[in-house]
Image 1 (cartoon, rainbow, N blue to C red):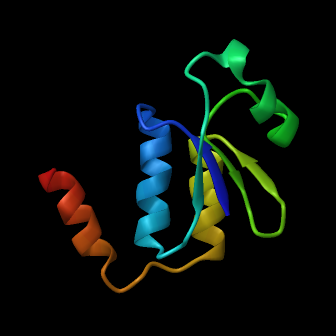
Image 2 (cartoon, rainbow, N blue to C red):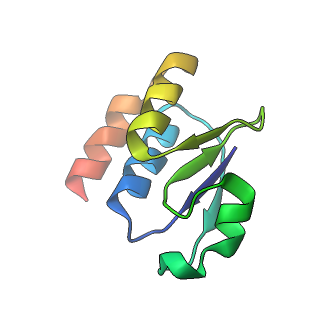
Amino acid sequence: MELYQAEWCPHSRNVRQRLTELGLDFVARQVPADEEDRDELERATGSREIPVLVTNRDEIVRGEQDILAYLGRRFTERADADRHREKLRAA
């Protein structure tokens, strides 16, 4: 999976956290801070907004809520998901 995202974006952070809780490997694709500079993102996903998830089936899922819903339908949490959430809260 590929996640088009930015480290400063809270929506991207929430998706990264959920991917970790599910134990899913992904490639983080950094995007420019300014939407007008995101031509490559738009060519790849049809969107200039982040986050965008490109699945292993080449499905494109846009936006935090849609991505989280997609992940919830497809995957089960790993056994240590609660510990990952605790570490996030402690950070």
